[in-house]
Image 1 (cartoon, one colour):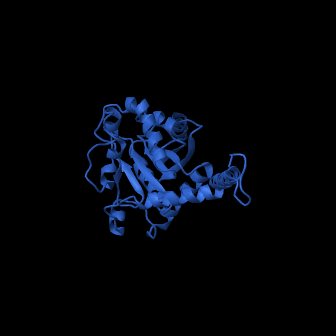
Image 2 (cartoon, rainbow, N blue to C red):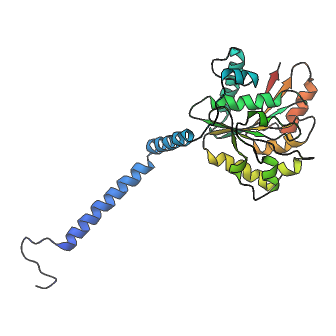
Length: 274
Protein backbone atom coordinates (compact mmCIF):
# COMPACT_ATOMS: atom_id res chain seq x y z
CA UNK A 1 0.00 0.00 0.00
CA UNK A 2 1.40 3.40 -0.95
CA UNK A 3 1.68 6.37 1.45
CA UNK A 4 -1.15 8.11 -0.41
CA UNK A 5 -3.73 5.36 0.17
CA UNK A 6 -5.23 3.79 3.26
CA UNK A 7 -7.69 1.00 3.86
CA UNK A 8 -11.31 1.84 4.65
CA UNK A 9 -11.76 2.52 8.41
CA UNK A 10 -8.04 3.00 8.99
CA UNK A 11 -7.32 6.29 10.86
CA UNK A 12 -5.50 9.00 9.03
CA UNK A 13 -2.27 9.41 11.05
CA UNK A 14 -1.69 12.94 9.84
CA UNK A 15 -5.22 13.97 10.74
CA UNK A 16 -4.87 12.33 14.16
CA UNK A 17 -1.55 14.10 14.72
CA UNK A 18 -3.06 17.49 13.83
CA UNK A 19 -6.04 16.84 16.11
CA UNK A 20 -3.82 15.86 19.06
CA UNK A 21 -1.62 18.91 18.48
CA UNK A 22 -4.68 21.16 18.42
CA UNK A 23 -5.94 19.71 21.71
CA UNK A 24 -2.48 20.12 23.28
CA UNK A 25 -2.23 23.73 22.09
CA UNK A 26 -5.69 24.42 23.43
CA UNK A 27 -4.82 22.97 26.83
CA UNK A 28 -1.62 25.01 26.95
CA UNK A 29 -3.54 28.18 26.08
CA UNK A 30 -6.05 27.45 28.83
CA UNK A 31 -3.18 26.90 31.28
CA UNK A 32 -1.58 30.21 30.28
CA UNK A 33 -4.90 32.01 30.70
CA UNK A 34 -5.30 30.40 34.08
CA UNK A 35 -1.77 31.39 35.12
CA UNK A 36 -2.40 34.96 34.01
CA UNK A 37 -5.64 35.28 35.96
CA UNK A 38 -4.90 38.00 38.55
CA UNK A 39 -7.03 36.33 41.22
CA UNK A 40 -5.20 33.02 40.84
CA UNK A 41 -1.80 34.73 40.77
CA UNK A 42 -2.72 36.69 43.89
CA UNK A 43 -3.90 33.55 45.72
CA UNK A 44 -0.71 31.66 44.83
CA UNK A 45 1.48 34.57 45.93
CA UNK A 46 -0.44 34.87 49.20
CA UNK A 47 -0.04 31.15 49.89
CA UNK A 48 3.70 31.28 49.22
CA UNK A 49 4.03 34.34 51.41
CA UNK A 50 2.28 32.68 54.37
CA UNK A 51 4.37 29.53 54.02
CA UNK A 52 7.49 31.68 53.98
CA UNK A 53 6.41 33.52 57.13
CA UNK A 54 5.66 30.21 58.88
CA UNK A 55 9.23 29.18 58.17
CA UNK A 56 10.66 32.10 60.17
CA UNK A 57 12.05 30.40 63.26
CA UNK A 58 11.81 32.26 66.57
CA UNK A 59 14.02 30.54 69.18
CA UNK A 60 12.66 32.56 72.12
CA UNK A 61 9.30 34.26 72.62
CA UNK A 62 9.20 37.00 75.25
CA UNK A 63 6.46 36.92 77.84
CA UNK A 64 4.53 39.99 78.95
CA UNK A 65 6.88 40.80 81.81
CA UNK A 66 9.86 40.73 79.47
CA UNK A 67 8.06 42.90 76.93
CA UNK A 68 7.18 45.41 79.65
CA UNK A 69 10.77 45.44 80.88
CA UNK A 70 12.06 46.15 77.37
CA UNK A 71 9.29 48.74 76.79
CA UNK A 72 7.92 46.91 73.78
CA UNK A 73 4.25 47.14 72.82
CA UNK A 74 2.09 44.00 72.51
CA UNK A 75 -1.54 43.03 72.12
CA UNK A 76 -3.37 43.10 75.45
CA UNK A 77 -0.94 45.48 77.18
CA UNK A 78 -2.27 47.71 79.94
CA UNK A 79 -1.18 50.93 78.22
CA UNK A 80 -3.80 50.54 75.53
CA UNK A 81 -3.53 54.19 74.47
CA UNK A 82 0.14 53.66 73.59
CA UNK A 83 -0.66 50.55 71.54
CA UNK A 84 -3.44 52.37 69.69
CA UNK A 85 -1.14 55.32 69.01
CA UNK A 86 1.33 53.05 67.21
CA UNK A 87 -1.50 51.32 65.38
CA UNK A 88 -2.67 54.71 64.16
CA UNK A 89 0.81 55.49 62.82
CA UNK A 90 0.77 52.12 61.04
CA UNK A 91 -2.61 52.90 59.47
CA UNK A 92 -1.43 56.32 58.27
CA UNK A 93 1.71 54.87 56.68
CA UNK A 94 -0.21 52.13 54.88
CA UNK A 95 -2.75 54.65 53.63
CA UNK A 96 0.07 56.72 52.12
CA UNK A 97 1.79 53.70 50.60
CA UNK A 98 0.96 51.90 47.37
CA UNK A 99 2.54 48.66 48.60
CA UNK A 100 3.14 46.64 51.76
CA UNK A 101 6.87 46.60 51.00
CA UNK A 102 7.65 49.87 52.79
CA UNK A 103 10.84 51.45 54.15
CA UNK A 104 10.33 54.02 56.91
CA UNK A 105 13.07 56.02 58.56
CA UNK A 106 12.66 57.24 62.14
CA UNK A 107 14.85 59.98 63.55
CA UNK A 108 14.61 62.17 66.60
CA UNK A 109 15.03 65.92 66.39
CA UNK A 110 17.49 65.85 69.27
CA UNK A 111 19.81 63.30 70.86
CA UNK A 112 17.99 61.23 73.49
CA UNK A 113 14.60 62.15 72.06
CA UNK A 114 13.26 58.60 71.96
CA UNK A 115 13.79 57.82 68.30
CA UNK A 116 14.94 54.23 68.92
CA UNK A 117 11.98 53.53 71.20
CA UNK A 118 9.57 54.70 68.50
CA UNK A 119 11.44 52.94 65.68
CA UNK A 120 11.51 49.51 67.30
CA UNK A 121 7.91 49.68 68.49
CA UNK A 122 6.76 50.78 65.06
CA UNK A 123 8.39 47.65 63.64
CA UNK A 124 6.79 45.58 66.42
CA UNK A 125 3.39 47.03 65.53
CA UNK A 126 3.65 45.80 61.95
CA UNK A 127 4.78 42.39 63.19
CA UNK A 128 1.51 42.08 65.14
CA UNK A 129 -0.14 41.26 61.80
CA UNK A 130 0.29 37.51 61.25
CA UNK A 131 0.46 38.08 57.48
CA UNK A 132 3.30 40.60 57.62
CA UNK A 133 6.93 40.67 58.67
CA UNK A 134 9.05 43.52 59.96
CA UNK A 135 12.75 44.30 60.03
CA UNK A 136 14.34 46.82 62.40
CA UNK A 137 17.66 48.17 61.10
CA UNK A 138 19.80 49.93 63.70
CA UNK A 139 21.58 52.67 61.75
CA UNK A 140 22.93 54.42 64.84
CA UNK A 141 26.40 53.02 65.65
CA UNK A 142 27.01 55.91 68.06
CA UNK A 143 24.19 54.89 70.40
CA UNK A 144 23.11 51.37 69.47
CA UNK A 145 20.13 49.75 71.20
CA UNK A 146 19.49 46.70 69.02
CA UNK A 147 21.52 44.23 71.08
CA UNK A 148 18.88 44.11 73.82
CA UNK A 149 16.31 42.80 71.33
CA UNK A 150 18.40 39.97 69.84
CA UNK A 151 17.87 36.44 71.22
CA UNK A 152 20.68 34.57 69.46
CA UNK A 153 24.48 34.91 69.49
CA UNK A 154 25.54 38.02 67.59
CA UNK A 155 28.57 38.05 65.34
CA UNK A 156 28.46 40.86 62.76
CA UNK A 157 26.29 43.89 62.17
CA UNK A 158 25.50 46.60 59.66
CA UNK A 159 28.89 48.35 59.68
CA UNK A 160 30.69 45.02 59.12
CA UNK A 161 28.41 44.24 56.17
CA UNK A 162 28.98 47.67 54.60
CA UNK A 163 32.73 47.55 55.15
CA UNK A 164 33.38 43.92 54.19
CA UNK A 165 31.96 42.55 50.92
CA UNK A 166 32.55 38.97 52.08
CA UNK A 167 29.95 39.29 54.86
CA UNK A 168 26.62 37.88 53.57
CA UNK A 169 23.32 39.55 54.39
CA UNK A 170 21.94 36.49 56.19
CA UNK A 171 24.79 36.73 58.70
CA UNK A 172 23.63 40.11 60.05
CA UNK A 173 19.88 39.41 60.40
CA UNK A 174 18.89 38.13 63.85
CA UNK A 175 15.65 36.94 65.46
CA UNK A 176 14.02 38.83 68.32
CA UNK A 177 11.65 37.60 71.04
CA UNK A 178 8.76 38.76 68.85
CA UNK A 179 7.32 36.62 66.09
CA UNK A 180 7.85 37.88 62.53
CA UNK A 181 10.25 40.62 63.67
CA UNK A 182 13.95 40.57 62.78
CA UNK A 183 16.82 42.91 63.63
CA UNK A 184 19.97 44.10 61.91
CA UNK A 185 22.23 45.56 64.64
CA UNK A 186 24.49 48.50 63.94
CA UNK A 187 27.68 46.54 64.51
CA UNK A 188 30.87 47.95 65.96
CA UNK A 189 31.11 51.69 66.42
CA UNK A 190 32.36 53.95 63.68
CA UNK A 191 33.75 57.44 63.85
CA UNK A 192 31.61 58.37 60.87
CA UNK A 193 28.92 56.13 59.42
CA UNK A 194 28.06 58.76 56.82
CA UNK A 195 30.48 57.32 54.25
CA UNK A 196 29.13 53.80 54.83
CA UNK A 197 25.52 54.87 54.38
CA UNK A 198 26.25 56.96 51.30
CA UNK A 199 27.54 53.99 49.35
CA UNK A 200 26.52 51.53 46.65
CA UNK A 201 26.74 48.74 49.23
CA UNK A 202 24.02 50.41 51.35
CA UNK A 203 21.83 50.81 48.28
CA UNK A 204 22.22 47.10 47.53
CA UNK A 205 21.36 46.24 51.14
CA UNK A 206 18.05 48.11 51.02
CA UNK A 207 17.11 46.50 47.71
CA UNK A 208 17.98 43.04 48.99
CA UNK A 209 16.06 43.24 52.27
CA UNK A 210 13.02 44.57 50.42
CA UNK A 211 13.16 41.72 47.92
CA UNK A 212 13.58 38.99 50.54
CA UNK A 213 9.98 39.36 51.74
CA UNK A 214 7.49 41.13 49.44
CA UNK A 215 5.34 42.29 52.36
CA UNK A 216 8.13 43.27 54.73
CA UNK A 217 7.95 46.56 56.61
CA UNK A 218 11.44 47.94 57.18
CA UNK A 219 12.33 50.54 59.82
CA UNK A 220 15.62 52.42 59.66
CA UNK A 221 16.54 53.80 63.09
CA UNK A 222 18.65 56.88 62.27
CA UNK A 223 20.67 59.17 64.56
CA UNK A 224 19.07 62.49 65.45
CA UNK A 225 18.94 65.11 62.73
CA UNK A 226 20.54 67.75 64.94
CA UNK A 227 23.60 65.71 65.95
CA UNK A 228 24.61 64.10 62.66
CA UNK A 229 24.21 64.03 58.88
CA UNK A 230 23.24 60.34 58.76
CA UNK A 231 19.48 60.94 58.80
CA UNK A 232 19.78 63.21 55.77
CA UNK A 233 21.73 60.50 53.91
CA UNK A 234 19.47 57.61 54.95
CA UNK A 235 16.34 59.45 53.86
CA UNK A 236 17.24 58.75 50.22
CA UNK A 237 16.52 55.06 50.81
CA UNK A 238 13.18 55.41 52.58
CA UNK A 239 9.60 55.83 51.41
CA UNK A 240 8.57 57.69 54.57
CA UNK A 241 10.54 59.75 57.09
CA UNK A 242 9.11 60.20 60.59
CA UNK A 243 10.48 62.69 63.09
CA UNK A 244 10.22 62.13 66.83
CA UNK A 245 9.73 65.35 68.76
CA UNK A 246 10.81 65.26 72.44
CA UNK A 247 7.94 66.88 74.31
CA UNK A 248 8.81 70.37 75.53
CA UNK A 249 12.37 70.26 74.18
CA UNK A 250 11.97 71.41 70.58
CA UNK A 251 10.99 74.70 69.02
CA UNK A 252 9.01 75.23 65.80
CA UNK A 253 12.29 76.27 64.20
CA UNK A 254 13.86 72.94 65.24
CA UNK A 255 10.96 71.06 63.67
CA UNK A 256 11.18 72.93 60.37
CA UNK A 257 14.94 72.36 60.25
CA UNK A 258 14.37 68.64 60.87
CA UNK A 259 11.83 68.43 58.04
CA UNK A 260 14.26 70.14 55.68
CA UNK A 261 17.01 67.71 56.78
CA UNK A 262 15.07 64.58 55.80
CA UNK A 263 13.46 66.21 52.77
CA UNK A 264 9.92 67.47 52.46
CA UNK A 265 9.16 64.90 49.77
CA UNK A 266 9.96 62.06 52.21
CA UNK A 267 8.59 63.65 55.39
CA UNK A 268 5.44 61.82 56.54
CA UNK A 269 4.73 63.14 60.02
CA UNK A 270 5.74 64.06 63.54
CA UNK A 271 5.52 61.79 66.58
CA UNK A 272 5.50 63.58 69.91
CA UNK A 273 7.27 61.55 72.59
CA UNK A 274 6.16 62.22 76.14
